[in-house]
Image 1 (cartoon, helix red, strand yellow):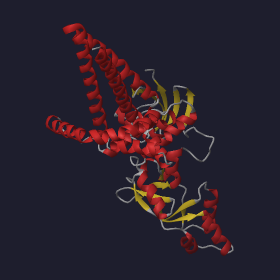
Image 2 (tube, helix red, strand yellow):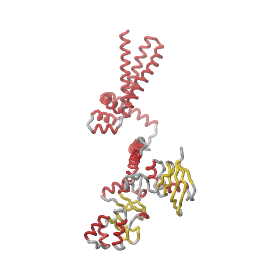
Image 3 (tube, rainbow, N blue to C red):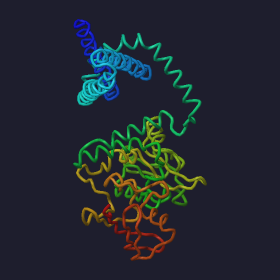
Image 4 (cartoon, one colour):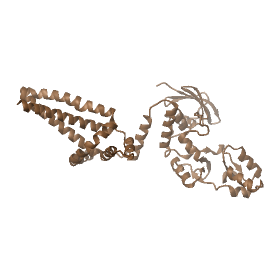
Length: 422
């Protein structure tokens, strides 16, 4: 009798240890860093390879772990009930329930799962070789359970098609970026860059282009010396050439090509020579996404495109640098992190030009102003107010106060923006 009791208690202890392993393995496999495991596998770590292989069939993995965990827990509870009934009669059922609940909760659930959460990668690498044969053995049963679960879910739940795998993966990436810790300027800049990369396919070129009223261009019919002077006085290396009217672009003149022509022609240039060295204009629709345009720039080996609307009218120009600046920020001055047109009055108060884009503000100050209906802060005010405001009027929306400081005709040119305390 005594020997039998010792064996039963020893079996219960062993089963609790096995249960602790299953609990810790489940937590570590789900909480481990998938990118780190991928990197370790690429560097030749066989255990990481096993972790990734097991995770590739995660439903079968989780099913096998839960199956094994439930088997040992139920068996341990049955043995404990049997032992305590022998010792205390029918009251032993209550003692067994209380004792096993405490033992399983502390030693087979909370303790191993807490350790696995704190050392998820290490625990996953250690448990993977042991889990592989267990999954192989229990896999068919887990697969049967999986099939039953899927059938029940199909019968009693509606299929959710709101997000596909790509959308889910993008949401996970955005969540990981938001969880990137740190409040310093460097960390904020890193977060902004990563968000901007994910936004490239959602932003159209008309949101970042240089508007036609701000373009430095030159009339091809004027004196070549005047065109050369236009190129020399421009801060850009490429100058659009127009004929008859500024919207009619006939070529794009590169400063380097102009210098070569001046040297070869010994300074004697004419209109035909300028047209011959100018590249043909490349017109793109204003609805082109930045991601598509970035690929197009790479494929065509060019850095300059003219944006037109649905009627073929020129709206502006976009360059490769414009798209890169959407990712890394303004690259004209590596030490200047402020946005042109934004004056910082205090931590929560700003004077902003109406033409400043909402995307730049969100990226610079980590605001969450919507940019679906308007690209600029002035456009956002017009959309929200549903009117053309007067100077001195103020509006509160999106937990911010917008006061109109200046207006030219119907265009809002200056706004005082204050963040309200939450």
